[in-house]
Each structure stands twice: as C-alpha cells, then as structure tokens.
Image (cartoon, rainbow, N blue to C red):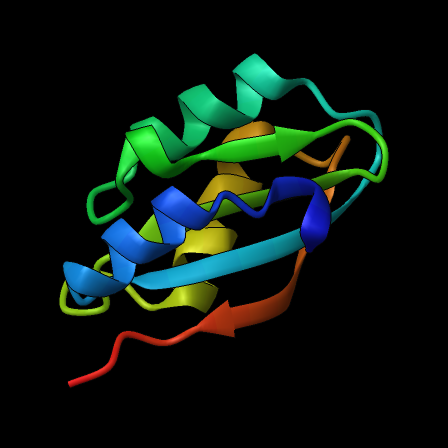
Length: 96
C-alpha cells in the first residue's frame, strides 16, 4: 500500500467523497497500460491512478455512486487481460 500512497491524492479523493482503492498486482506491471485501462472506466479519477513496479501495486480513487471498488478492479482486470491479476488490499472509504 505504501508504494502507491499519495497523501494529496487521498486527501482530495476523500474530500470529494471518493473511495481510495489499493491493489496488489501479480504479474509484470505496465504502468501506462494500467493507467490507460483505469482512465477509460467511468467513476475512476484518472488523475488519482498510481502504480508501482516493486512491489507490484496500484491505487486509484473511485466515485462509489458510480462504481464500487470491487467492480472498478474487475473492470480494470478485464481491460488489462489475464497477464496481470489485481486484488484489493485495502480501501479508504469516503466519509459522509
């Protein structure tokens, strides 16, 4: 989680009532491919996407009114294909 944690992104996301999602990645990280996949998904803030090659990880902010954290990860997974496997490590929920 620490590899992709960006305090400014987290603060902005939570202020906007978005959920911050931290994922573990199994496979070789292609940062641009992951960013592009996330940017095409409604509800994900493309400016919030962070990736790390070592440890292999990804984080992003998603609007829970549009898409759940699990659904967002599933859509990214479909977009990048079977060469990578994403799993949610932790979410920071938006506070009311």
